[in-house]
Image (tube, rainbow, N blue to C red; front, side):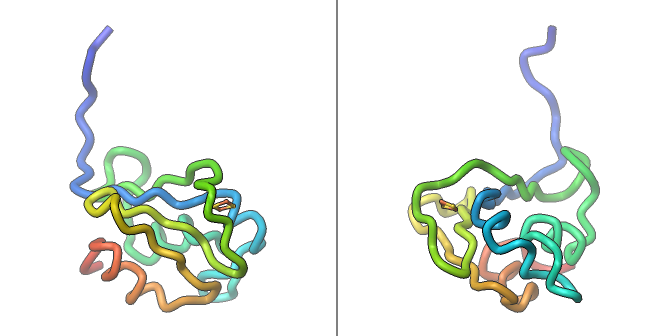
Length: 101
Ligand code: FES
């Protein structure tokens, strides 16, 4: 078995899946998508490790904000973001360093 696997990611963000579930969507055109799915679609990321960045849903991160989703930017793990329901995805992407589409 291999010890490493190549990925095309140059960035990774961890999105709390439990926050997303509690909000029952909250993002995307109709406000029905989870933050992770909406971000992936907004940025046109390919699936899995073939995308240029990883947007990964994880378990509860222990912050549990109201009407927001906890997000950890892998490049800046010392400062976590709380993304409000319905936030502008361009701003969210740029603040997380996911940059241009
Ligand atoms: S539910 Fe998201 S941080 Fe706890």
